[in-house]
Length: 133
Image 1 (tube, rainbow, N blue to C red):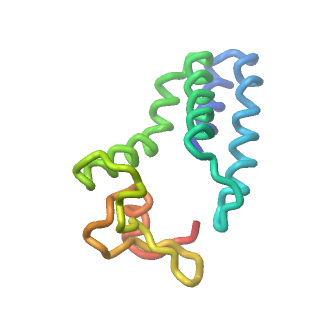
Image 2: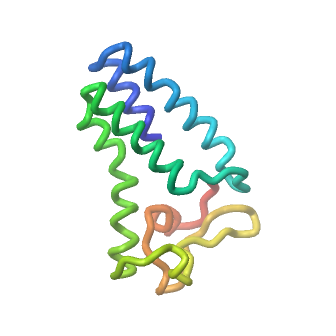
């Protein structure tokens, strides 16, 4: 999702060469999101997410659109801050026993009612009621 405003800003404010270099990031993200929906058939792991993040950052810098890139990436940064703030310590995800969301029988996500569950952006989005992916 953050790649679309980045590409649009590079097309408007940046060079056409950087825009053409950014297209593989868009196509890779679209292909990845297609196969990463429930039930997920692929998982990026740390190496995959670091690679996509490095490509995103490099394109934002090369396209001279750092501000727009940071604004488009704010939901991910917010999610990264919510988790440790709600757990109140730095832990691995494996150490947290309560899950922030629940997968319902109709494959919709609902917010967990467990008070020990960490706060995440997805949990806040589905707090009003279950939503599809």
